Image 1 (tube, rainbow, N blue to C red):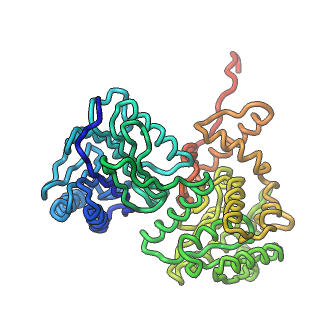
Image 2: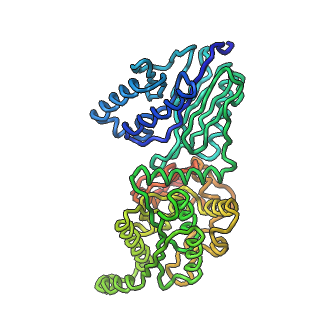
Length: 503
């Protein structure tokens, strides 16, 4: 089938909306549509969820919200300067001529247009244009995979292929924008901005539209996703400020860099909370980082509180003997710091940013109500080795060691006791993360000499599900979230290896 000879001027509206904010989202769509109309667009398209947000199922279950949604649709139909096609779970809505009409699977507008909220199958009917309305969440490399698929649809069916997308952060989820248009020959015609709102224009009388670049690397993708995700999380929560604990280690250093990029350095406060076990090098590294970022800091020593808690706990210590590998006072330090961070956030009207990484979360190497405190786990979906890689990329991009070199060089340590190292409790991170990567790849197995260690790590992951259930949500940027491995919080993973007779 030959593509249509009719000229079409279409504009994709790439929006950053807010879950449940019907009034605000309608205004954003109308503003973008007005800009599109001024450029000559005859039809605008927004993806599914653009009116009420991608995580609004709870709201839609309520009668008053559904009634308000119909009011929002009526408002759009009345005020839009051009027809608008909006994706819906049940198909799509076409706003045109002051009315809106809910349709099923196929729409017609100046030619035969197929609009769907799912990936196309091999039996597409003849048409002039295929519109993929489902928004696409960010995952590393996902944009290229999607574009390859869409190009094949266009080429194999000799039709235009169009895919609007949302951008922005929605809780843990991040949408990367990069709406695309392909010609009937499967050639890229236009691409929207990465991780930002925008207009993507299609004029079939023109050979090409604006093709904005993709991200330069996986690190570039993840960095932009984290900055956008954190910025939107705070903005949509109505908060402008954040606080975090600065330990002098890599995790808090990278979170500080992300937070300053997302919120502005003046709106981020680093809290140094030294104990008797905190090294001078860690304090020096934390202060140098803050100075490089132009980020304000406060220093709150915790030794007096450690002493006060020990005195208060004297009856407990007398009544109960210490357990093997007793962690009472190590955990107490983490919980004191959590209390100080939360109190600072309360006083300053800020959110606490959690600084834990995915390797720690997987292995339960954290303290409930201590270093698990926070509103959002900024790097909670990054393995420890990935934290270092992204931090190195960030410094190279900046052209200077914003994160001090010593933070890269020293062995990771929680500094909760003398000479403590993470490797006292965990395998070396390069080995641990290789196993975790395999396990999170849909339960891929690890073979060879690491198989036994992988089995022990898998059991440990499952045994600490109760901790992860109480941790702040992570910004999902890896494509392999720990929720893939979510088991029951009270389970005991113990498969049988033998069922021989008589046993």
